[in-house]
Length: 118
Image (cartoon, rainbow, N blue to C red; front, side, top):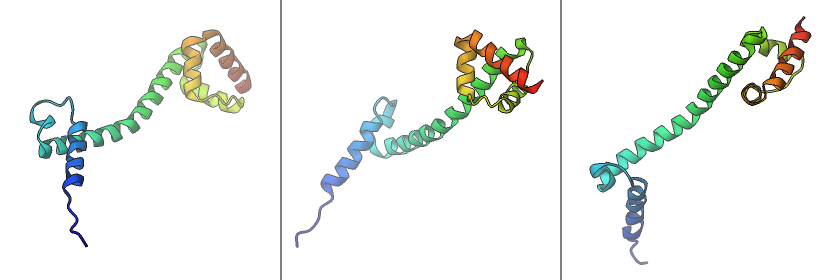
């Protein structure tokens, strides 16, 4: 049985790391050992921040809904509670979208929610 050599596989691994390190500054883009460390950090940050982005968007939607609903006489928490009681099944993303782009439709939703609570 012939001896297995790792030359092709190891070169491919190093090449993959250096391709992922394109655009980095200094030896981080050209030295395999340093590039590998930086690329692994970068992948970790990317993974974490993909999850963080979801929380940031939810807080943005909350702020937009709150800002739009206060002039109509409801705080954010009161509006969400009123929507639940009125069986209005719009999620926060859609409510924020309505508040930003369709103020008349958002006002109608708020009025319907208000009437369900009162």
